[in-house]
Image (tube, rainbow, N blue to C red; front, side, top):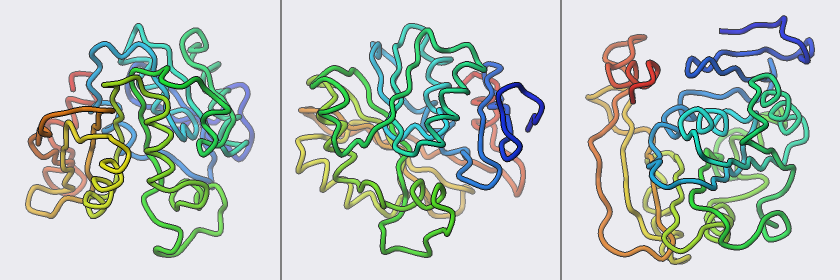
Length: 251
């Protein structure tokens, strides 16, 4: 639901209800806008003992806001490379009165060592680009292009930044297209990160998975837990009961 009358927003922006915790986010009308992926990822994370959390590529701050609501004791840092999205994230924090436990930093995660301390995080999360820079058609809108394609970073850069930030046995939770699971497993193994939990996401129960939710552990051991598939829709335009429970705050 969009509200265009909130203070601090510009004509080309909307204020949208996250439908969880009474939270709202400021977004561009024409640029990148969050989707259900962010909600699924925020719900997927294992919240146990996650006190210091970083969201890599926070965009307008959606995941950081959802984690603020879900993790009442966590201190959360969002990092964003695009100035306009960084600015919206900052204003979204003020709109939601969340500046006590969230901070937003402008920066390039490829230079994470210049932004944050080594092994300082319990949990890292990210909803990164889904396409390589040579895959598909790149949007003419720069904000959409950087959010969807690996123009400013790739999977290896992302996993390397997460590994730098995490304490030993710290966790990295992220979402990717299901087709990328083999390549991300390979990159994780190269950086001494092991899969701990995997959950396939299907649009409909009878269709192949479209996305995969992944949790990896730094210097972890033991096999991964394969969770029950998550189905988004029970019929066209009708969310499944699990998705409805997530939006009711019961996920």
